[in-house]
Length: 117
Image 1 (cartoon, one colour):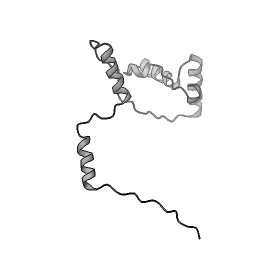
Image 2 (image 1 turned 120 degrees about the vertical axis):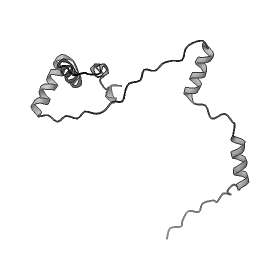
Image 3 (image 1 turned 60 degrees about the vertical axis):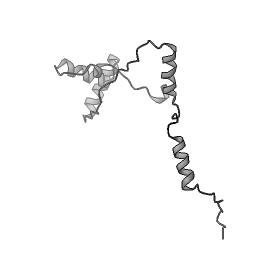
Image 4 (image 1 turned 180 degrees about the vertical axis):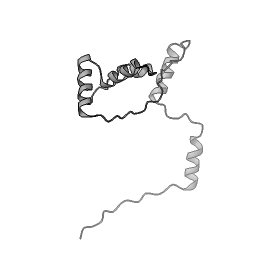
């Protein structure tokens, strides 16, 4: 019969030790993050520079369309022929038909496969 491993027990801290550790930590500076350090360094380098603005994009949602294999092949060939993505072909056609298409959806943003990174 295999013998169970024996674990060393360690003493647990008392309530007073826990409370004193928690109260001594209050008011201390939280651990610094890399981004906070970068902001601090930028402010020290040029305090008069305005804060950086980050261009954010509205939420994106998924569009899933089921088509016949013939349609998929035609879309794929058209995209390859024009050097565009299939999404770009679709968005361009929708915009040309008069639909209001967000400019961000008309931009070609090809996802780079992991093996090409």
